[in-house]
Amino acid sequence: DIVMTQSPSSLAVSAGETVTINCKSSQSLFGSVRQKNYLAWYQQKPGQSPKLLIYLASTRESGVPDRFIGSGSGTDFTLTISSVQAEDLANYYCQQYYDTPWTFGGGTKLELK
Amino acid sequence: EVQLVESGGGLVQPGRSLKLSCAASGFTFSNYYMAWVRQAPTKGLEWVASITNSGGSTYYRDSVKGRFTISRDNAKSTLYLQMDSLRSEDTATYYCTRGFPPGDYWGQGVMVTVSS
Image 1 (tube, rainbow over the protein chains, first blue to last red):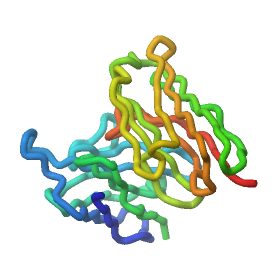
Image 2: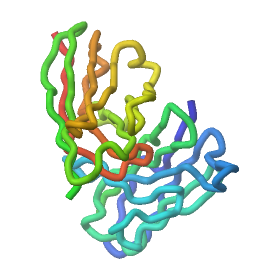
Image 3: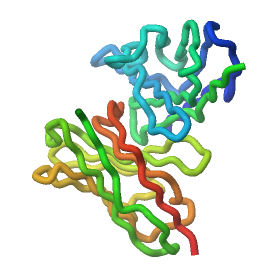
């Protein structure tokens, strides 16, 4: 199974700051046929279901604010949230879909100071 | 508007069965792969099972293989998860999700508690 490791597990920031969440996979998620990285990011607010933010490592889902930026390739990926807002308080998960079983990172809890 | 509404959860004893349903609306159900993803209390997300748009192929995580069965009725726009021989470690909120992976729409989730 591909193991997804997120860091940090929690993060406290002030509104307006830029935050970076890291995700590392135990093997490359780069598919040579489509030349894409099969990595997604989800946001889950307290008491809600997950919401897709980013897919193919860097493609923003429709309607997602452009302050959410996905980057990285191979085994190392990053979700950057610029100018964090109070509404961004949530847990964030990375997920690989290069191979079954599809696996998620352990999550990063974003808290506001 | 895309909607996914799960039902069928509840409290069940270890070893017993439960069947979850996910009623879909607002899109052409038969065009999409579907999946079930679960989340144990205060834990992270875990993929459980997936099914192709026609229902011709299914995929499971090892820990549920042989106990859970994912299926769909495209005429009814409904996804199912038959869960047999339930264990305490199956206790979780179960979400149905469209297109997974990645899942672009998720239901609100249904709680399954396995306990004597």
